[in-house]
View 1 (cartoon, rainbow over the protein chains, first blue to last red):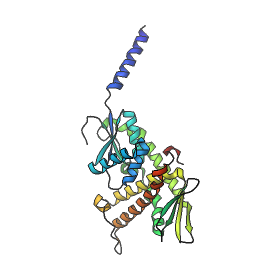
View 2: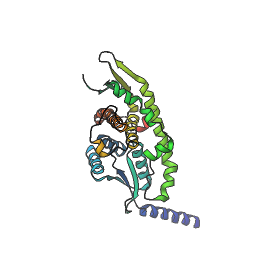
View 3: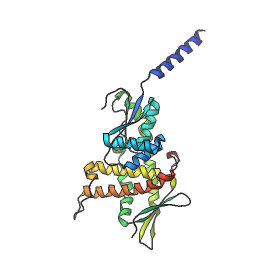
View 4: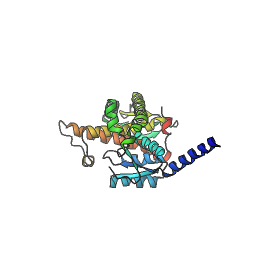
Length: 101
Length: 175
């Protein structure tokens, strides 16, 4: 059936696109003001990370100026970036494999 | 005299106790620090997350920015309302402030926003943050800002302490 075949093709195309879409990094950048304990707290709230993982990421931000705190599909990355910004952490989104700003 | 500290009431409210007068002065101007033109708030606190990919910037402006600005405005109102609840401890002549548990996230974020805005206004650097404010007579505006950032940070730290052991309500439960 033509109509059915068309629908199937569309479905296959959608799945292929989703599978091949490049993942995105959620990147938090250092600022001189935010308390370390606050940054740890926000990572735990937003991602549900353990204290140890949240502390490790916070120290990466502090020592290296930035840290990739999550990687995955774009829609979820946008949600996480928005949540992190709502707590006023400097956050950007980068396509995996793209160069830094 | 004992310094400022936080207590949790049986209802879960946070009570900041033993606050000296200069802490109160600092907290009372929080709404003033946070009340800015929308464009100033957007550029200072909510920059477009798609710095590298201009083709996605419009999505951020359309979907994320308005929500962030609304949440920010709601949080400022929560803080403004809670600041009406100052009390005085007659025995120690210090002040206390009661913050409902569901307002804790608004306060934590609001305090951070105020510190960041002061930091931007007065070009506060990491080196500045590592030193004590120089309070000559009269003190420079930057040094006063550095003192305010420090005091607001202390309040933020006090609010984080009980949270580290118990956790607060989810952000969506504010209000």
